[in-house]
Length: 295
Image (cartoon, rainbow, N blue to C red):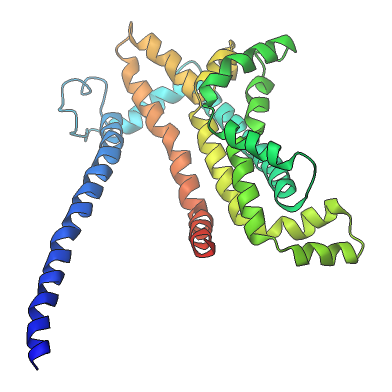
C-alpha cells in the first residue's frame, strides 16, 4: 500500500513529462512540413492567377477568376505546343533512363550479392566511392566523352549517362543479399537451369519491391536533372522540361507576361511526380517496412 502510494505520483510525473516532451518533435516536424509545403502552395496559388493578377494580388492569395484554365490554354499554344514536346522528352529521358538503369542495377547488384569472384571487394569499395561523387561533377567529363563519340546533341547524350547509377547498384546489392536465399539458387542449378534463367526466374521476383524503389529514385533524379541536358543539348526540340522552362525564364526578363507561363509550366511539371508517388507508394512503402523488419 505504501509502495503504491509512493509510486503513483512518480508515474504521473513521468507521464506528464513525456506528454510535455512530445510537443517538441511535433513542433519541429510541423515547421519542417511547412517549410517544404509553403513553396508548393505558392506555386499553386500563383498558377491560378491571370497575368494581370500575378504582381497585384498578395503572394499567397490564389486567383478566383479562372486563371489556371487560361494559363494552361496559353501555355499549350506557346510556340505551337512546344511545352508538351518538352514534357514528352522528359518522359522519354526519365522513363527510359530509369527503366534501363533499374535493369542494369538489378543485374549488377545481384551479381555482387550472389557471386564470388576475384576483386569483388575492390569493386564494391569502388561502388561505395562512386555513390559519394555528386552527379554535377561528372557532367562536364560526360559531355566531353559524348562529344568525342559524336553523340552530343542527341537523345542518347542524356539517356546513356543515366543508365548506370552507383546508388541503384548499391541498393540492389543490399536488397538481393537480404531477400534471395542461396538455397533457391542451388535448387535451380540442380535442376539444370542456366545462370541467366536463374536470375530472371528465381532471383528477380523477390527483388521487385526494391527495384520499384530504385526506378522511382532514378525517375525523379532524371526528371529534375538540369545540368546534364543543358550541357548536352543545343536543339530546343530535344530539351526536357527543366531546360525548356529555363529558356522561357530567360525570355521572361524581356516579356513579363511569360512569368505566368513559367509558373504554370512548373506547376504542371510536378504533377507526374506526384501521380507516380501515389501510384507506387504501396510498393516502396512496403519495401521500406520490410527492410526495417529484416534489419
